[in-house]
Length: 283
Image (cartoon, rainbow, N blue to C red; front, side):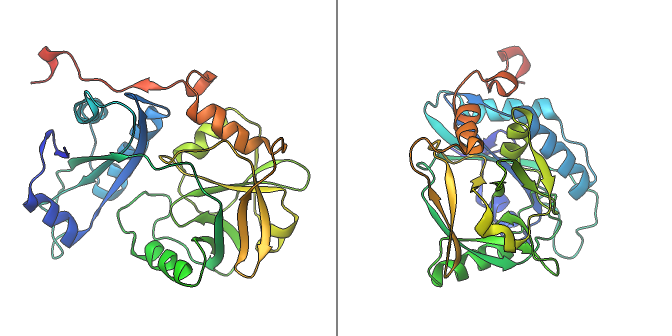
C-alpha cells in the first residue's frame, strides 16, 4: 500500500505529480523495520523542502508516516518519501506551497552486479538537491545501455573531473590506498556520509585520466543490497568496467560498505527503528 499524508494515495494526486513533476525525495533501505542513517534522511528532506518549497517540514510527522507505511512488513524494503504539492501547477509554481508526503515501498533488489560504465560530461540541475527531475540522468543511462554499457559516470563539463553516477555517488581507492571522494558538485548521499563517519578519507578532484591508476572504484547507493565485494577499475572500450576483485583484496572502502551499512550495530551508524507512535499520538 502506498500512502499520501497517511491515507491511501489516489489517482488525482499522482496525476499532479506526474504532470508537473516538481518536488524532491529520499529513498531509504528498511530492514525489518530498521534504518541506518534515518536522521540523515530526515535532515535531507527538511533541507530540500526549505530549498525547493521555502517551507518547513515536520520531521516527527515524516517518521510517524514512515512507521505507518512499513508497519507489519518484514524483510528488506526500499522506501521512497516524495515531497510535492499537488496544488502547484505549471503556470504558478511560485505560489505558497503546502508540501504533501507520498510514501511508496518496493522490495530491495539483489546485490550490486559488476558494472560497465561510460563516462559522460554532464551535471544535474541543482546537484545538491535530490529532486524528482530525473529526465537527464535517465536519458543518459538509456543511451549508455543502448551502446552496450550498464550506466554512466558523470564528468563535470569543462573540467574532465569525475563527479557521480547517474543515480549514485562514487568513491575511489587511489594508487596510494587512500579512500577518495570526488571534489565536485554532487548529491551529498546518505551512504557516502555514513561511510565518511567510520573511515578516514580525503576529498579531492579525480580527473578522468586517473582512472587507469585507481586501485578501486565503486558505487555508493542508498537502498540496494551490497555484496561486500571490493571493486577494481578495468579500462575498456566503454571507458571502464567496475568488476569485483578476487577474494581477500585490500580495498577497505567496499568491505567497509558491507560491514558498516548492512550489518547491525556498527558504532555511529547504529540503525534506527521506524515504528508507529503510540495510539494516543496518532490522531
